[in-house]
Image 1 (cartoon, rainbow, N blue to C red):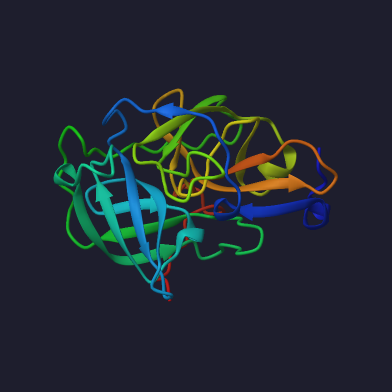
Image 2 (cartoon, rainbow, N blue to C red):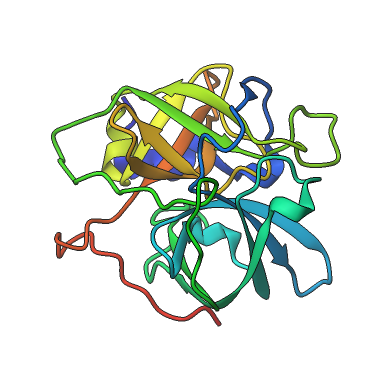
Length: 242
């Protein structure tokens, strides 16, 4: 196990913008109606992508590292080319976690308020958040998104992909409020901000980042635990993004 005080020297932490993997398969169309594709309009004029997930008719949850000048949420997406089936809503305001750390990616969670209410249908539905049980570690989970399908791809996947991950009991991850997985499959560039959905069909975490041991070993995929508003120590402190 890693010693918490030595994390800075033992780990190289990367956003998903700099690390991609292969694995997974196309999701059954509209089987995950809560997943949102986020168009991020950057100050440079570039458009980048993240994922998110619908909490209710007003809010989308995503990763705090997905901050941008402004956003458009694409709801009801399976194929990015089926524009007639996609509902586009701009964002009114962004609320990154007040204690998000841009170096370690601790508290990598953000709420986005939609400028108009989402209209629910068979292809657009919210997902419930898991009840916070600090002693419980879910094992079998699924992540999904439109991240780059392989290292050589210049573009996001044209269709929603998903992959199963198995969470591991890791002391360093737990101390920094992450769920973690290891292995040859995991999230890719463009998947950041998407949901970690486990056995009961509820969202447990937000796709965040990867960590690589300087001494070698497997890549660690990290998912920010969703703060529990009933827990004063870990509640989601929100503030408008600058």
